[in-house]
Every structure is written in structure tokens, then in C-alpha cells.
Amino acid sequence: MNSKTVLIIYHSKRGTTQKYAAEIAFYLKSKGMETKVTSISKFKAVDIENVDYIFFGCWTSGLLFILQHPEKEWVEFANKLPQNLLAKTALFTTYKVRTGSMFSNMKKHLKSKTQEALLQIQSRNGELSELNKNLIDKFIE
Image (cartoon, rainbow, N blue to C red; front, top):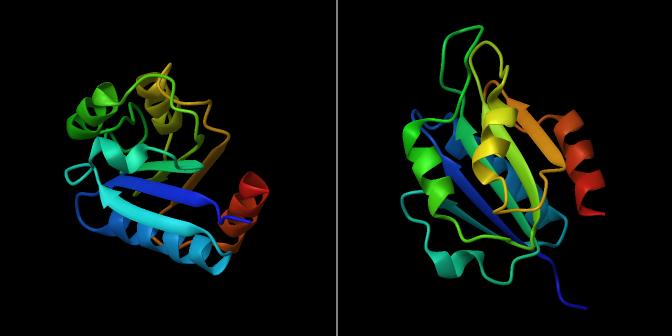
């Protein structure tokens, strides 16, 4: 049986989202999955071919309590993705105070490009919590 493949694509400003992406990858590797982690700036279209799962991540931009959204660079990246990607899709974000409308705004930019994001996880400090591990386990079943 071939192992499942995962692509984790992130946009990080101060390193917290990059750390979170690495934590997710480490956890998925411990489950026997083949993982690749890349930033949006190093992403190549060939990276997305033939993967079973894609995790899209970015940090939460916006005001402290309202108007959370992905930063312009992430939006431009999402707009350039090919249409109708078949991989099962997950979203992740890091934040200071709250995520608010972050996930709905990420979904808006990925609409028609990916399957509906059935997993949405978040971290304040870039660490993968036990709750997030449990959610990932259900997602990859």
C-alpha cells in the first residue's frame, strides 16, 4: 500500500506560521504520511500534483477583533492556483487575539480551486495541540 502524500503550503510573517506548518508535518510523518512543506514564495505548480491532502496556512491579518483576512501575498498565491484540485483540503492559521473571519475569507479565495476545507485548525504560538492532533486524525481517516 502506498503511503498518503501531504503538501503543506504556508505564508509566515514572523515565523509562527512556519513553525506551525513544521509541527503539522512532523505529526503527519509520525502517522506514516509522506509530507512536503513549502512557503508560498517557494511553491511550484508541480508540488501540487498527485497529493492526497493539501494544508493551506497563513497568519491572521487585520484588526485585533474584527476584519481578519489573509495577507495580500497569500491572496495572490491562492488566485494563481489551478482550478478543481482533487486533494482533500485543510486550512490552518496562527493568530494573536482571535481568528474571527479568517477561515471564511481563506475559503472565499480558494473557492472553485479546491475541495471544501473540512479541517480548520489554529494556533496562537505555532504549537500543535492535542485537540488539533485529534482533528487531524479524523480528517485523514
